[in-house]
Length: 284
Image (cartoon, rainbow, N blue to C red; front, side):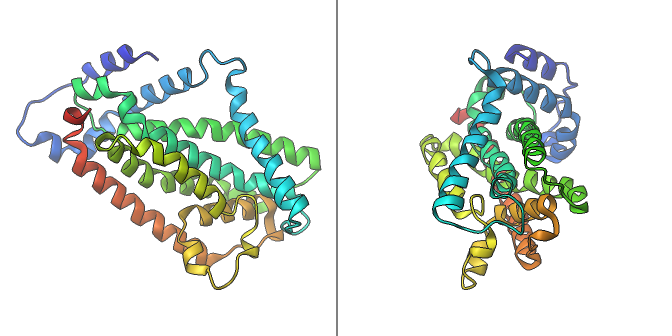
């Protein structure tokens, strides 16, 4: 979907000039402009791999190569244990699945406002839609990666348990865990353009402090609060519990701590975004 079509769609909405209306009806407008959210997400999906040699295959190649690297380094060289009898590759990919979604959403959403600067500076709509659309695009890559996980389980002849039915719950949690930081970083990137250079470092650092290439069971007990305050930890442990089943331990206290941090980051991200939103058109 082209940029001009997105603008045309937004202009077809009913506009009522009323003092303070935009502020008092903000959340209602967010629902009214839900189709614009779908338009922006569809456009981003269409252009993501445009003019690339192998197209959407990049969504498979990147996490697959990362899985191979982590399996070799942590599983073969370092000799770290897997979860139960599950192959180490499946354990790693079960953690790679939510992490790839989180990191992609964070990277794409942080630059989304600058990408749509012409749209933001010309028409009114709730700006929260822009980073939300970027996070929605990451769900498409998530779906492709999930298909690769299924292929891995078929290859290793690994059958998941009943816990697999609860995977959508943790997928929703991963979605909300990515929204809060995405709102904050996207707003901050409008005011301070050097934020774009910090984000790859944040993503890279987060990869190694999150249980992607290793199990949470190897984390020293004296680090429970600091480790579990990472909102991605509860999501990754939940994914592993759903995929590997009873062979892995589900840390309930760590999960609730991660959920609490996710809620705090979401509230903080929305509050910061809304506070800075009025100045976006001038700063961009």
